[in-house]
Length: 269
View 1 (cartoon, rainbow, N blue to C red):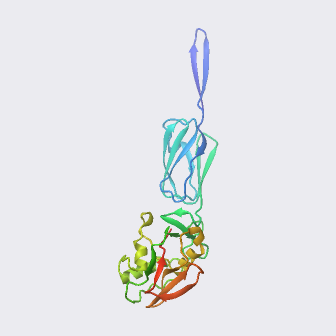
View 2 (view 1 turned 180 degrees about the horizontal axis):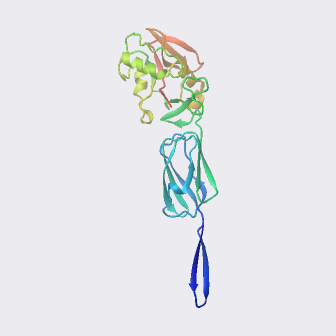
View 3 (view 1 turned 45 degrees about the vertical axis):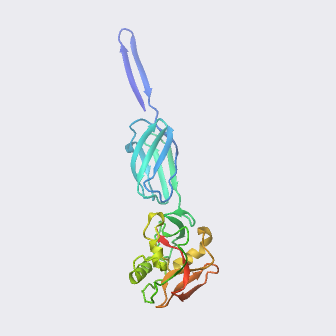
């Protein structure tokens, strides 16, 4: 940007001075992690001016789910840019309005095995799965370790809970039904202990359904920490039995609710 100043001494001659104000140039930015809540990035460059604000930047947010909140001047070579929302996969672009260079921050897509949402990403929904949304990532987060080395499915009494869902997306409803029938968050049976887990400060953990448990088995190496023993699902077969899965060979079988099995809680994202 150029400013022209004319200084005139009529007894001699006129002087014209041109003052050039250099435009800000963005050089680097810090990263944004998937799932980051209200992230702030540090932007480095040159020619930043005190008083710089959101109106001085052009920011593209794509599919990240973020909103521009504020811009803070740190020095002539550094500013911070703050956002609201929780970051999802996509690109954030930042450009100073008086400059031609644009920097892109890519919020990476989640992958099985990533730490996220109080646990580990265990499964990402695929096309055809219940709850799948094109262009969005949803799935299951699993606790970082087993909640029990052996616990019974029932609370000591054989009852029909109605928790018969086996598909992906039914584990939460199954867990709710079991707890309604057997007692709220009691920790002496599988579903109650799973619900009582509070990893990451979340209170929406549940015992996975038969199909959800199978996804944990299929991705057990990336997740880590499983034994080769049997694990309970939340899927009931009848009054006296429910579905379990062996994590050595993957076999799923009906088993008496009184038997002790491992459990690993999950939550949806």
